[in-house]
Each structure stands twice: as structure tokens, then as C-alpha cells.
Amino acid sequence: MTTQQAGTPGNATTTAETATYVYAVCRQLRAAALTGLPGLAEGFPVRALRCGALTAVVQHVPTAEFTQEAWEQRLSDRTQLERCARAHHEVVVAAAACGPTAPLALATLYRSDERARQALGEDAARFTAVLDRIEGQAEWGVKVSLPAGAPRPLDRTPPDTPQGSGKAGAGRAYLERKRGLHQAREQRHDRALQTAEDVDAALSRLATAARRLRPHGQEMTGAASRRQILNAAYLLPHDRAEELAEAVETWRTRTGAQIELSGPWVPYSFVGEV
Amino acid sequence: MSAHAPVPWDTPGPLAGPLGVPLVDLLDRVLSTGVVVSGDLVIAIADVPLVRLSLHALLSSVSERMPAPWADGGPL
Image (cartoon, rainbow over all chains, first blue to last red; front, side, top):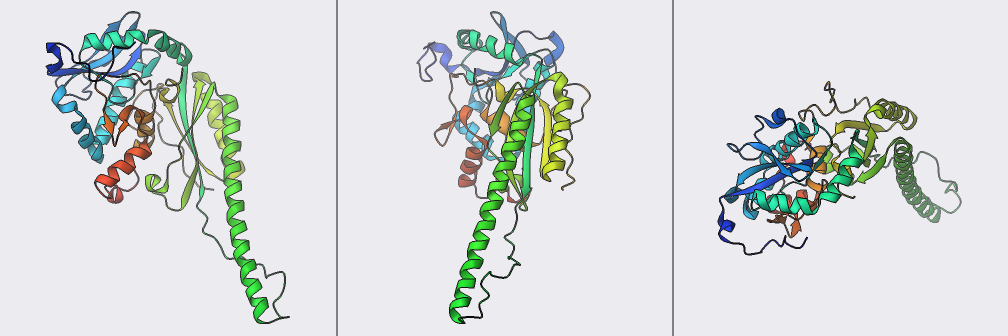
């Protein structure tokens, strides 16, 4: 439990040329499930590592290429970041084809297979609980966005027609207009929040578990004209996927919002909190 | 209103393949979820352990270091 300080000076093996990268933990794997996967380090097979009743999906990686600096560089480069994320995901997906699989966070590294087995073994109860929870379930992603809504000028005439008092009337009209714009913005904001709440509540009712992820800003979606108001993940039994899709369609029609559904995902968002 | 179809991932079997996954959704998951266990080598970006780093934090740390690498790449 406490043997995992990062800086623990070990014996001679601390200078080992390879480290053990762990992708996921599952119960068991078909022998062929991982064959041919490149993973993150070419030339090193992605393989199963038995840890008591559990199986870790691991790969030896060259230690020199997986240092802090190497990661910083890797993640600063969009192409490398993507390659890395997809390689990790590809292994996770391959393992998940054999049964419930708990993905580990990116870049979980141990000094050796032995250390990985030891550390994961200490968490065996947690992994077992996670695997029980996600068995037969898949994660679905739902993103809801609305038009960003450029503040449109109010077309109604000011309530007090500014004929009475000339300048003062014009000033009041200006303030009214400002206030009107402000209110319109606030209302739009409230409506957006309400829509997000409504959709989330409805979909959560279908789900075993629900989780909100942070909405993506416009710099990430690349759609300046839309604002994402909900980025959520739902865990559902495999046989309820259709129900979810139907509910999404219903809410699309009802709200006019753009609702994107993605999945089925290995339940990444539902393995970290047990 | 919008005619945007759901993200196309109509692969035959469940969890069949990673190819159609939009990167931004993938990073949401691969970076900031999953089981967090303490590894021997703790990788941190801007002092945030990578295993807890969100996509947002990553993007901002990346853009500090190298301005606007995403600008020409369109949406993530």
C-alpha cells in the first residue's frame, strides 16, 4: 500500500532499460486478443500480465522514451498526442472485447512487471468492484450544444416613447435597450442551463450511472457559432442503447438543440470512482 | 434544428473499434478518466499529474508552450 513512492531508490533494477506500461485491468483475456497491437512502443508486444485473479494488459516500453520530458514533448505535439491516445485506446478496446475491462489513466508506468503486479495486486479489491460494476454495460457520450446566439437588437419599441422629453427620453430609451439586451442574454443563458439539466435528467433516468464531463469550449469544438452546454457520459446495459438513442432523438426534436451521441465506449468515465 | 447526425460509429459489434472516435471525446476519456493508481513514474505536466490532467488543462499547458498549435488544424 505504501510501497509506491515515486522516488524510492531501488536496487540495481532502477536503471532498467524498460518500464512496464499498464493499459487496463480485466479478468481474463483470450490469448489472441492482443496479437499484433503496436501499443505505445514498437517492437515490444502488448501482453497479459497475470495479477492474482486479475489480468493486467501491459507492455514493456523503453524507459528513456517515457520520461517526464519525453511525455511533455509527446503531448505538446498534436499528432503525437493523437497517436498516443489512439494507441492506448486501441489496446483498451481490444481487451474489452474479451470481457469487462477497466482502463487505466494514460501514462501509468511501473519500473518492472514485478512492481506492476505488486501495485495492482494491492488494489485488487477495487478493481474487482469496478469490473463487477461495468460488466455488461457500456458508456455513451452525449454532447448538447445550442446556437451561440449573437445578441440581436430588440425590435420592440421602448415602452416610453421618447417624445415627451427629448434628450432625457432618448437616454432612457438607450438604458432600456441596454437592459433589454442584458435580460435577453440572461434568459438565453438560463434556458440553455435548463435545457442541459432537462436532457441530463432524462437520460440519467435510463442509465445505471451518469457523469458530467466538462463542456468543450469553442476552441475545442471549432464551431464558433455553437456553444456546448452539456458534455455527459452515461453508463447503460448493452440492451438499453436503443432506448437511449430514442430518447436523444426525442430531446433533439423537443429542444431544437444539437445533440451528439457517441459510443459505445469502454466505460472510461465509470471506473475511477469506486 | 441542426441536421448533425450522431457521431458516426456504426461498427457492427459492441466496442468494435477505435477508428471513428472523435479525438476530442477520446482525450476526454483517455486523459482524465480511467482508474488512477500510483505508478512508479509520475508524469506531470505543469505540476499536474498526467493521470489527473483534464483535456482543458492539457490544452492550456500546450498552448502556453507553443502558441496556437491547433489553430490551423481545425477542430480537434
